[in-house]
Image 1 (cartoon, rainbow, N blue to C red):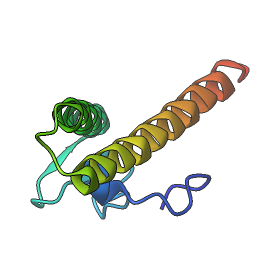
Image 2: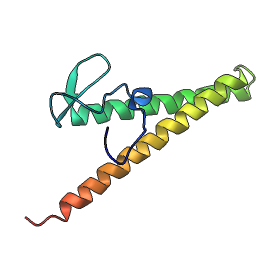
Image 3: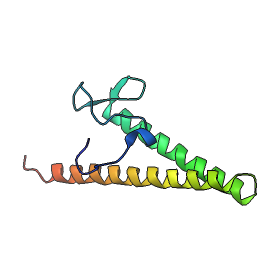
Image 4: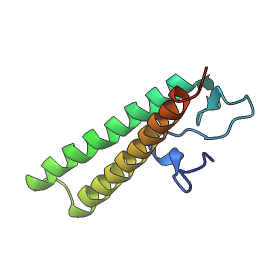
Length: 105
């Protein structure tokens, strides 16, 4: 697991394993395929946006009386968790970039 992110469950937002026997530049997704760090982040972002859009759609349906309250609450809570994880990952990436940029060459 990536230090500092502790108990985040990446499988809920992107299906990506945080550890990989292939090394630090690759990661293994839920299907067993290996991709680059950029493609893994892109996939996580895409899935997070999909989760947020689903929650928005269900919220609108809930307001119109077409969706069960439980479904709306589950979708919104899932979207909140996905957004929190995405922000934490973004913060770690920015922090790592800032640390690297301060290194003497």
